[in-house]
Every structure is written in structure tokens, then in C-alpha cells.
Amino acid sequence: MKIVGVWLDSHSSKNYKLRIGQKVVLKDNKLYFGPCDIDNECLELNSESIVPYTEIAYNGDAYIDINIPDQKLLITKTGDLKIYDQLGLVATYPFIFIDPSILKY
Image (cartoon, rainbow, N blue to C red; front, side):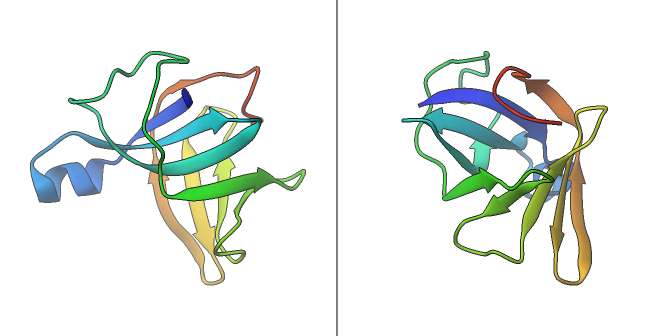
């Protein structure tokens, strides 16, 4: 698994007193999304990573969580990650890095 995007999760970082982020990794031409411990994981583009929680797929507009189809992940033009569900915006995460050859925004 190779890391292709990381965003800072400020809210969780404050609650847990750790630097926590959200990451997207690539494995076997599939994308996976989940949390990461920024301080304990090598956060370089294409560095090795453990498997995060859920598979995502691009639908031409946003990334959709395969397990929760009502949840979509949108990467803004500035690189920030916005997560939406059926009720609207859930959270916004500022970007740390993105591989633009893999992720669409």
C-alpha cells in the first residue's frame, strides 16, 4: 500500500492530544481511506502504509465510500478534503500532501 494523500484532522488531534490525520492509500489499483497517526507513520508520498478502513471509488464528481454510499469525499481545488453525508458537510480537513497523478481534484 502506498500513501497518495494525507490531511490533518484538527478536531481529533485536539481530542486525543495526538496529531491525527486522514489518508488515502493505493493498493492493487484500488483506493482506501482511513485515519492515520501523523507522528508514527512515515508520511512521504508513496511511502508504505497499513490498510485503512474503507475502499473508495471515484464517480466522476467525488470519491464515494463503497461501504457507506451516502458518504462522499471531495478534494477541493486547494487540496482540502471535505466529507459529506446525506445531511450535508460533515468535516473539512486541510491538506498535507496529495499525489495529483492518482487523486482527482
